[in-house]
Image 1 (cartoon, rainbow, N blue to C red):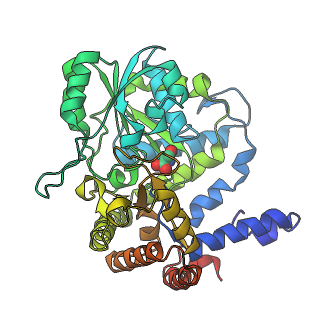
Image 2 (image 1 turned 120 degrees about the horizontal axis):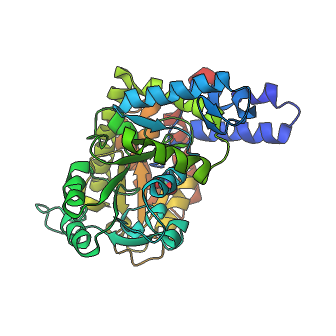
Image 3 (image 1 turned 45 degrees about the horizontal axis):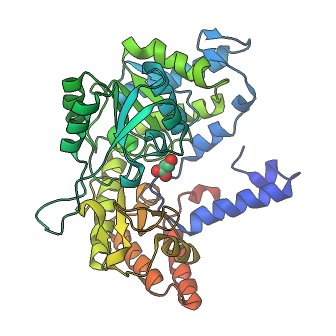
Length: 428
Ligand code: DSN
């Protein structure tokens, strides 16, 4: 079992040491990366199981290798649990990642050269939404929409997805597919807003739910299932499963989606990950997970409010989901996202720098930080701890050149994390 590195890796002390060190890092420092979470030990056990040994190209009942009777049961359980969780007609649980899920969804319904309308990376979209650096932009023709301009009027919310621009572009460009979804956008994305526009121009609609999947499963965000033609997501963010991807669609698109994942894009599925996905889907279909989804949102709101009081500006004027996107420039015009991330690392607070809309700095430097509450909510933290975290972040950034102060904050962080240990069952 992966959980007991000392026992099972006694012959490889270098890797055993590194696994133990990483587990300790996760337990003793704050994990605020919006795309991360703490899986259950049950998910880890399935991930570290004998299923990693098995080749299973194909789908349940139609494999290209022998010995797959048990694997078929595992993958069927995963598919059925996922369909039940989201009320979907068809599920494919084989994508190795969210990027693969997106590429397979594109392959299922598009031909090379077709036009896709998706969100700009520097306004909150994802690499696979047509970034020039991504293979997706070499296969398909992307047109990008973004956010409304920033507004300093507290009554008028700026930096929201610009549905008017989206509609104008859809009417002008007649895309075959419109993609909804983002990686650094703090507001609710409602598939029904996109459906209306897609129907007006005869486009298909894909909803990339990588970030809000767990919030949707928990009933804290509107579901795109049954509204969008294709729903893709990762299983390891708010959904709290193993690293991986999945696709939901109608029966009508099922064959095309399955053929796009295998043999179109991938070879043998990672059935140990599929088993771990099945475990996570079961865990997500519980009243406890619903409460968790709502708490994640309440915690992000509390974190955002407290950070606003510390002098940061929240992009989009606040949050409806699990993340806040901080504009650092109101806090300190000299402070870059890179510097902030590095100083926080030294204080035991893990987050990632992020571009803000119309960022004057490069994506490697940035003027923003993205913070998420999914992981520490799993660890049991609530709104009171979010206020504490905001203070710790502000102190760390004010004393970013003072190593003694950063070390003192790191001790406070360790004390806080000690009271909210996601893996208390592992022992000291
Ligand atoms: N996983 C995305 C995120 O961090 O939001 C990037 O692919």
